[in-house]
Length: 72
Image (cartoon, rainbow, N blue to C red; front, side, top):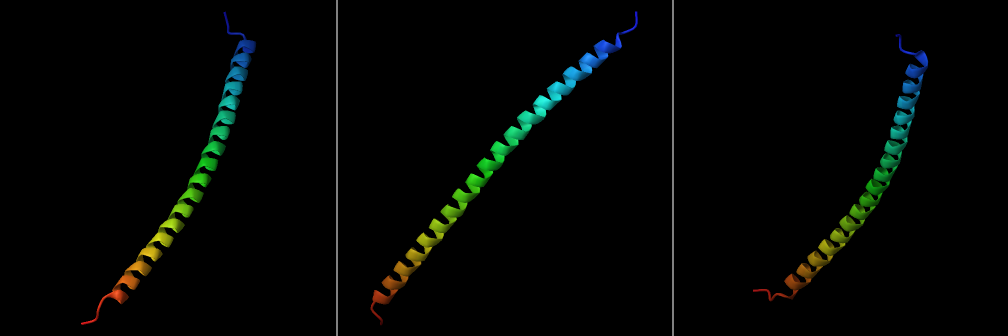
């Protein structure tokens, strides 16, 4: 008995639907990951800025302390 072409077509349609669902899921996951990456990049930039500000304040304090030292 030969396989019914309608069975092949139904199998193909089911596989296409499964692939379409997978593509949708991956697209959603990709969008979520891009959003998280963007948020992390913003947080990183903020932390780098705060680090630079702290470094500048420490350097300024060191300079003030050096200027307070007695000169021999």
